[in-house]
Amino acid sequence: MELRPIGVIHSPYKTKDEAPFQGRWAKELKESVIEVFEEYKDAMQGLENVKHIIVLYWFDRADRDKLKTITPWGPEEKGVFSTRSPSRPNPIAFSIGEIRKIEENKIYVLGLDALDKSPLIDIKVYSYDIDAIKRPRKRIVFNSALWDECVSFHGHSCPGLAIGYRAAEAAVLKLKLTFSEDEEVVCITENNACGVDAIQYILGCTFGKGNLIFKDRGKQAFTFFRRDTGEGVRIVLKDLPRKENREEWTEELLRMNVEDIFDFQPPKDDIPKKARIYPSLKCEICGEKASERSMRIKDGKIVCIDCFEKD
Image 1 (cartoon, rainbow, N blue to C red):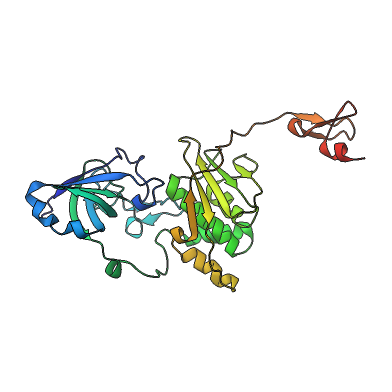
Image 2 (cartoon, rainbow, N blue to C red):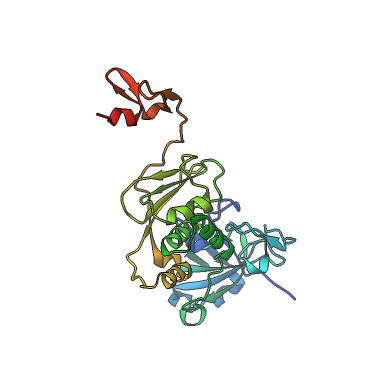
């Protein structure tokens, strides 16, 4: 078998850490340039009438010895053939790119996750009628085990929990998040509904650690930040036609394309400051201790909120 590169991809991503999990799900779609070698330039004829293309390229910096991996959804290990991991015996990459313009032997596209100087293997036209599965039964990134764990943590399955699950799922892909051991990830939730439990379980955002901030706006909206980069995204539930049956609506939310569930916006809030530990003070009326930030002054005494509000 002979495989010959037909070109090279010039990309803004120089390392694996810079590249998004999925090019089309990146927070900001960046332009890549596909340079087709001169001897294959004639094969580009007709691309000027095409909007989207399937780009096959070689993950030349992938680990070819890896047969199992843990996806961003963890925690269970999976065979690489059941994932989109770049590490695999034959690291052939597949992306759908949106053509912006064509100049000579160069195609300017959005939506690739290729590293800079990746070898180009092939280009095919993308056909919605042929390539799109209108209602896929299950997304490849859906982790049923993780969903079951969220249900156990919350206590029951419901549409609200599914909304939080999908929001956390989208945040992981948009910002390349992992579980927050400390305050690496921050979430501002604009509601105190069921979905917050899924976010706590998946991303480790909790009130106790100070990286879950509640702003009571009554909206199904969540803002996620990465502290190390300062990147953030506000994820807002669309106005969707809901099913009367709660179980059916839950299944529908878990199955839908995330872009059909949420709007993705820049954060409207600044990234919160890191949690601060305050000393405890003793109330001079009841004798109970409370955080310094929650103490009040009443009749010249340092008192807790309960005693402050008493007549």
